[in-house]
Length: 326
Image 1 (cartoon, helix red, strand yellow):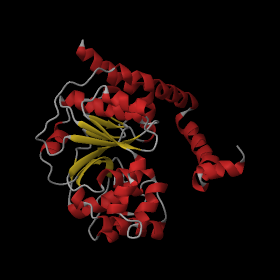
Image 2: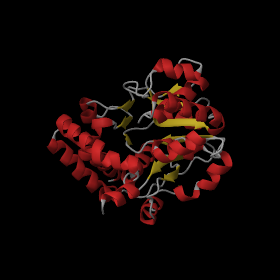
Image 3: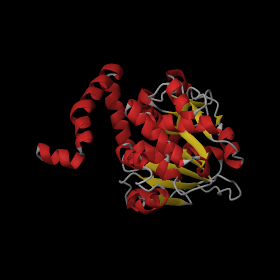
Image 4: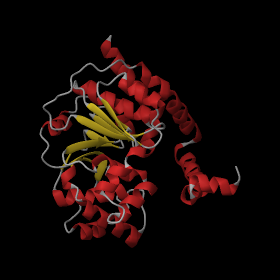
């Protein structure tokens, strides 16, 4: 493949990332984490595709009378083992089954779907290719140009748009890079009685834009350290016109950011009022001691805490659950 063909297949933005930014990231990762730690994590991640398949079928019932009895993930070929294990650990420790809603990132094939459907009672796949009509009905390009364009450039935004467009009820969206280690009582309480939006507590503020700037957009003070690894919100409360304005303003005033999704959600949660799961029990970026001793209910393995996740912790999670079946 020549340079022109590569550019056409990837797009200029992705090509620049592949040829310029990604090599820099790899160098920084090796310098920070060490070559052998990265290789061990890479090997563990590859083995995870087969490793999660040993888990037996979940036999708990779906709580039909709960307002929120479905969990939503954006996933695909690269991330499905993490999605699978996050959903499994949640159901295993809560002793409840939940309907699993998979938002296809464009790579969710039939084999992956069959793996989920063989273990979970209710699995619904929403294909990326089938979203166009729903988007045009609810967020037409003529009225929501920034959201529609940014959604294609920045897949993180699908956790907001694809998860909630056309819906008015409460729903919860989970990141795949999380593991539950015990019964998540606070989360289950919210799923039974949702009143305000729900999120996680971050270890640091990561919005990509300053809090004073975001607070000016919001018209209220935007709090620090909102993390969107877990977000529960009512679709009717999102206000897509405001989200379009926030998206357009952040891009035009300060440019794009990897954390833009988190910033946009933080603005809207600040306006609505929200509850946050205890950061000491639902932990974003668990430190090394916590990764070794595991005292919290939930770990969200962001940044280089994911090295231990891929090297060992997904195996530990499976071993613990299998041991309890014996």
